Image (cartoon, rainbow, N blue to C red):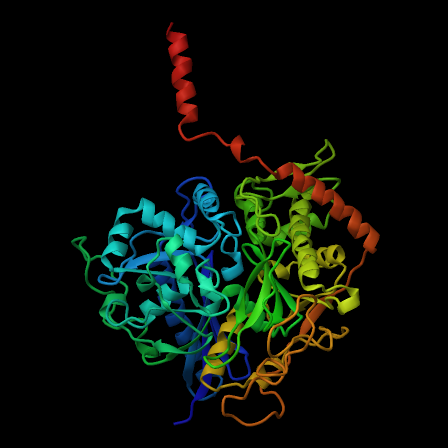
Length: 612
């Protein structure tokens, strides 16, 4: 029987879960999205219910598959055969569950949660500073990373401590939780993660790509509770529906048990290989086909810029993170990246809508901001839970500065859009210094962008203006899902390296990287990216997975829109200098928040005085 081959991509994000199904030409056939509720136990904390995440995954996979089948049949094409499933996920968010029951032992602690700030201070004091583990892991001690979240749960959740001590606990990021569930849960589930997600835990050695035992000891994390680390493109296991992972609904008596349907939602996909897995930002880098020397910025809940440094691991001295970009096969070499993470991007737009009511929808932000020519001197530093790269200041808080009687909500909304762009410039400036990407070394020819907020044309133009670099936006902006699909397709030989990387967006721009980027062998000198990788890297793919040689690419080239800078470098620099002044005002403000119970104590004291 003839089939239409396809690849599915599961994208589990901070605010929603979505699934795309792509055909062999990387064209989306169908998709489905489900919102994910946010849980805020107290200020600065954010959690997700792992079982609710799983419910959204089942919904999205089953509905997308059903819709895709109907679409291809209606179009007169042969029915679909899913060749593989790729997974991408919110990084750092940490889950602890029981191997025996398969149930989570606490809500997942989300990447932007800052409950471990004091714990991080103690760890830094004990181990010799915030950078105590950076030489091995590439990361500073920060609430951002998984190890501190795990340690907080171990210290504060009795069920977690008991399970860890008894050996019943499984710990992982969201990818590990989902692969465990997809492969059977407590009935044979595979406990695994990939190098990109593992690189965000603060526990992995970036050279060996394995857990680092001295760091595990520092965080009291037994190796046995952690997943095995694999590459980004290989078969991790097969989709295996079991009773333990089926959605359970209460029956009429209110007790648990009984299924809404005797058919598991994953039944039609049983036996499909799970063959690709990357953290969301690395998946976007692959979806953008970033070669060494090229950078992308994703505008989602936060803002995440990554520069592919090829096989060279650059130790940042300007507040960036050194991380894994991707490793596309067990026998392939890893590409590394410099990353700058900004906590508030799309989240800031949602905050204007949901908390302040200044806009009725995210789309309105563009219209309202465009109604004024500038911010009227207003600057917004949205440090709602501190500042990430390049500052790493957990004590920062949001400030809105420069308001006068002339200020309107349009100025405030525009200031929020500009804040996203200013924070991105801070990160890019740090990358330029770390990787020496200045005009003498080829510079950065363009910034590739994606994510929901990248749909805002005004935001993209402001970004090009403030960076003084062209901003390139692909026509299909869901590059995170596409990257997961590409990794899975590479693993099952649906595409070759050449076919994938020959399809990068090709707007009319100057060359997107210097002519030589990366030394392929041996120790690498300090200094700029110096040699293009032509040995087992991206340029010639390190082999073609056993398929035919380098003919025309099967994956079509990516259509894209380029936003060119429309202001002078001097004008951009003046605005950036004012922004940096505003950032200074946002630091060291965490002590402005009232202590727990402070208001109640003052109220009791006031009543006591009044009674006298």
